[in-house]
Length: 88
Image 1 (cartoon, rainbow, N blue to C red):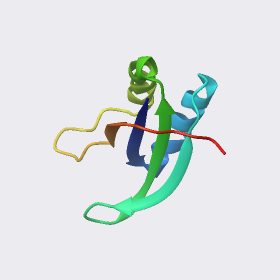
Image 2 (cartoon, rainbow, N blue to C red):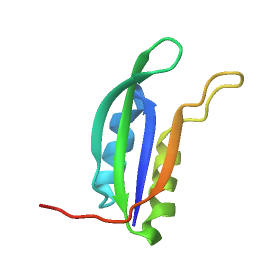
Image 3 (tube, rainbow, N blue to C red):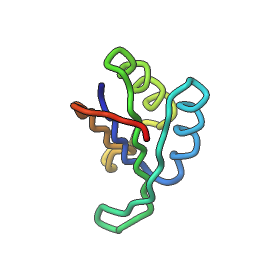
Image 4 (cartoon, rainbow, N blue to C red):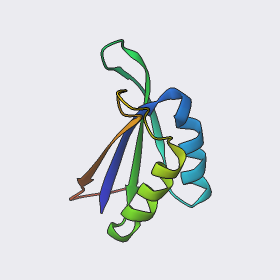
């Protein structure tokens, strides 16, 4: 199992979350701040089975426009190993 953490601009978070939910992924959204100007950011947490990592990443990449040249990235994505998982 993997945890995908995606930190993106607030303006892209709705489209990404909707696309992931429409494709059967569970998404947890956290408001966050960061960067030089402390602008609005959103962190999405997506828990997936190993074989679902690439489809989830494709959806995220499709919904986040490429960064204009010489600008900071639109999103930062981490894929982490999950050793244990439980729903209570």
